[in-house]
Amino acid sequence: MSDSILFCDNHLLIANKESGLLTQADKSGEASLETLAKEWVKEKYGKPGDVFLHAVHRLDRPTSGIVLFARTSKALARLNAAFREQKMEKVYLAVVEGTLKEPAGILEHWHLHGAHKALVSLEEVQGSKRAILHYRLLKSNDGFSLLEIRLKTGRYHQIRAQLSAIGHPIVGDQKYGSFRSLDLGNIALHHTHFSFFHPTSLTKLSFEAAPPPFWPFTLLN
Figure 1: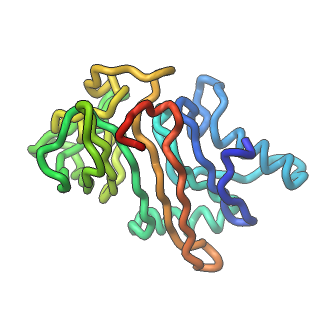
Figure 2: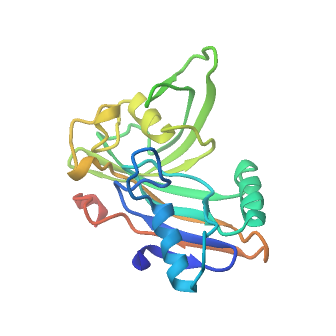
């Protein structure tokens, strides 16, 4: 776990989540990044009893990358507020199937949270919410494209569903139409950059995490 910790102080902890690992524990009882991080804090600082640690945001199980945890209730409240007010910068990398026609653009859809899957459409339907992301093509070859993605909204499976809707599913994401599988059901989506203001010192913090080594794409070189 120590290799996954990018930063830790009295107020927050930043970790780099592996693909296939839950962000937070669920009914399955399987290990999660949050429970592993709690154990790390408990051992590192000799904390008796329960450790307060709460994820400010989550990554889907097959997605890798940076996750922010609050270590105090005050930090959690302030970080949640910053998240809602879009005062955090989150940048993702994704490898998708095919070559996009436009080198950069904005995707806008209407989003519905279905049963274990997001549904998006160009027309508003009852109960739907607007989903917006910005993308930039970094490189393309061998029938794949590497994209930089910045979210304007944060919906369930948003990046995965929107890229699939325009005919460019994320490699390995067979739930959303990818024809290629990756080991252990992982997908080529990674939270690579995260910057925000510290909840108490107000210092700007920035973190980077490289994509995992299982991404076997020449366009990453």
